[in-house]
Length: 303
Image (cartoon, rainbow, N blue to C red; front, top):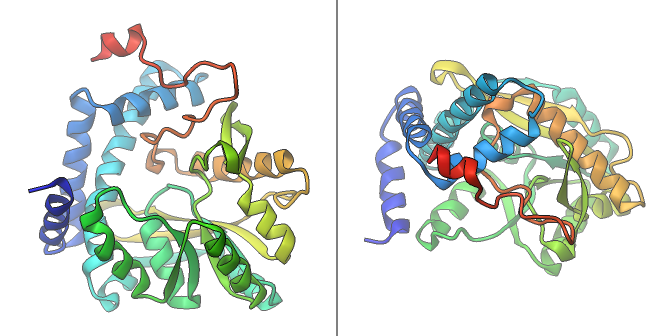
């Protein structure tokens, strides 16, 4: 059995559990990730050590542990978000903070761009917003190809329109904005050196997308940040909607990218334990600078 088929079967099994039990199972996975050497733990430690260098070592270790537990919960709760009927999933969104910002943006008629970092439950954010307004977003098939159809069906069943990550997809995003619609973008992925510029993120240069400022500038759309906070004890989620920093549509793409990262950082600092610290956000590096994630003596010692 390949890993994709195994992952699909695990999701189906987890979908039979109530959300508190599924998240508890995920927390156990995260606890194990923190206990034994693995690449996700190593990357999370490196990111947290450098992004929070001013914090005591004990506090950083606690944040690593908490973030890995939350990563496990993210994986496990995906079963419910993808596979439960909408009538059962949507009530899990217990509260929306900042709904008036989104309503005002939609009322302007120039479209709204929602930026959803890998914070909390981004799957829940996308599903919830798609059922309210419809949402157009780019889609890249997962590495586990056996999950492709399941993922696509799960995201589109609430009203999302998924477009490819190419020039045609960009045109579809711009068209949706010009029609006054809502589009969603993940703002904290490395876009590749040809599609980004380096801008500070937690004090370190991170390759940052230029697609967002270009779309915002061309369309005049409202730009907002959103994330779904995972509530304790499986009680559901709280959606936070925040304004983007001024200048996120600046014609100077480095300045715009700096404002974009500032917005992501503000969201992460509000909920640091639920950020995906195990992602190699700094894998793209400015020319002449060392690999951010190169193994060193400290890694070998901790393993």
